[in-house]
Amino acid sequence: MLRDYLKLHFIVLLWGFTAILGKLIALPSVELVFWRTLLAATGLAVLLGARRMPWRVPAGQVLRLLAVGALVATHWITFFLAARLSSVSVCLAGLATLALWTSLLEPLLLWRRVRGYEVGLGLITMVGLYLVSQAELDQLLGLGVAVLSAGLSALFSVLNSKLIKQHPPLRLTFYEMLGACISIALFFPVYSHYFTQGRGLQLAWHGLDWLWLGLLAGVCTVYAFSTSVELMKRLSPFAVNLTINLEPVYGISMAAAIYWLHVKGLLHAPQFNGERMSTGFYIGTLLIVLSVLIHPLVARLMKDKEPDLEPVVPV
Image (cartoon, rainbow, N blue to C red; front, side, top):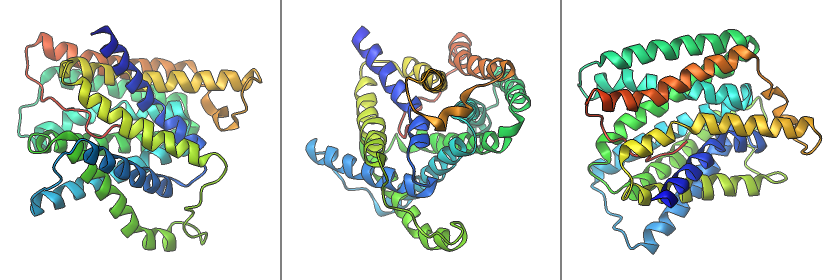
């Protein structure tokens, strides 16, 4: 059991590392997500074949899964864009509002009642977000995009809470990764003409992009996801979701460590020069993370049944 918990924390650590990889990869956000989804879909297809799992999905369901995949692509594009517009730490602080977004969207989409404790925790999150925004005024755009990205993540998580009851997680994620890749490919002509300032598509890898993309798609997506599905057979959804809430903590800690190594001359990483934050930022982030960690504990204390949202599409 201890080994399973350690493996789960390692997986969450990998998911926290995705924002750092987004900072290291030279590709623009749209092209980056295209490669991530293409490589991830290929890896998941190999995994499905190796495990001899059925591929067939009813035509109507295929379109629904592909549409959710397009939503996933939009989430990832805004996520990596936020990491470029601000620091990794600010990006992850904005992403930590996922629980707040989920508490707002679930009553609307799943037709359940609003829970009082979620409103209270949401207010704490808003105070934390205000402190972060006031502390890092020069990174407000990146913070705003990260909060939007968290909202998109909450939306497809709520949608997946319904779909996961109809499809095996591995097959579900394969079709969503495929949908994400196809939607970006269809968007390329518009993107290339209106959003690249005449530079066109930049799909060629530069420097160590091949390594970082391999880690992002192979390790942080395919490996981490397939292992998390295996762990959920032995660990409770409560334990898994509580641990996943530590993703921003791990990500911010790693970004701070890289910045410290860069300052000390032990690592050349100029992309992380903006990781030095003010006290107000850390106080605000602490409030956001505390509200996220407290949420499942209060839910259990109140004996209020939560939908078991599996980590179907990790960040």
